[in-house]
Length: 362
Image (cartoon, rainbow, N blue to C red; front, side, top):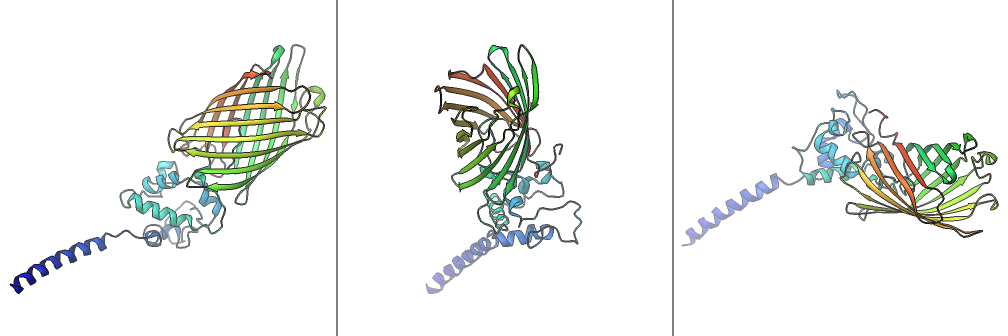
């Protein structure tokens, strides 16, 4: 009887050993082991790029560079690792790992790669929501824009303004921005054209919550009287425009807001004003290249003289023009729907280029 029980125990023990052996054999690797096995031969053990003895012909990213490391969203990183570089219009020398690594292993590997950035405070590109036409966004970025506005004013006036905007990151959370406008104004009597009031701004991220997909920032824009006020091309006074900015994603919906004060030095030449903007977007996918419908609501309130208020509505579309979405187009129409109408309607469009992510045509 004892031998019989012993035999059963040995058989059960053998099965457990086999099961445990299989489990140990298939145990997932941790981040360092996955990186050493799949990535280090090309990207280097320190994450700084390809060793000299490889056959790679394209420059590789430096994972220790926090700007480069944080500039791509989690979905972009995941798609490149899973499907290869060609899937995102990058080099086909980056192979696909979708059939080699499980989704969990890819997430583990991505977490390890992001930890090559040793500086704290860099907000991830997951918080870089599509920019609306008129509401400034809280995320700092390296970007160039060519903006075009057309305003159909009262009494038959028409106004075209072309603005070149340049934005550049400063450290982990800062950004400076320069806006250079050129305006053409048409009335029944004459047409005038020339540079308008240029502006210089600084923005700084105050808080980020990656898991909640939310961030806040503060900005200060200084408007210089570079336009000719006598010809209707500027206000003729310095103005300071502080703002509080925020953004949050609720599943596929994104809400961005801006509270802005307009404070001219010479209040006889320009009105003090408060502006409240809220923009709602619907993300049709995680790809930056896809269409994003957007609706902005703006409320303006004058703080001096005859009090005037206006409520503006701006339906619009945001569409990526390149595979990675680093070149995009925004277009929409702004319509006064309540209060004192400052104009009949306004058409806005902008060509957006995130110049560190790639060229205009690739």
